[in-house]
Length: 154
Image 1: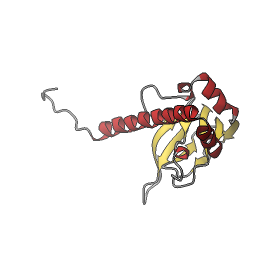
Image 2: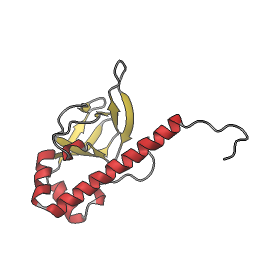
Image 3: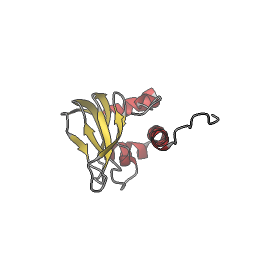
Image 4: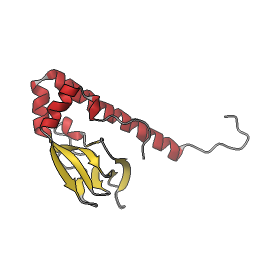
């Protein structure tokens, strides 16, 4: 759904990426599996290896609305970095998904123990957030921008 280059784990230096990957574990989600629910407590985050994950929000009186989709190399979940912040959205596997899972508490401990590592992780997640905000802005502009009238100056 979004356009442009998305920040991936490769935004981290080789050393810091290796340190983070050291605590990762491979997980799989079946198609249709809920990965997390909006409002829940974030205790993990994921990097998609294969498959497609959608992010959605609850709309009172309606079904969930998909706001973004994530695929290979992308971060699923950022609320873990800002405890006690709950998940701001939900996530669902739209296809079978293989991912790397990271324990949020362990990652925060690593960040606290090494400020350089922590800063790099925070900048990476911040880059993901900035990209997603810009992407959301673009979608809103597409949705709500008034069409040009014929003959109107461009």
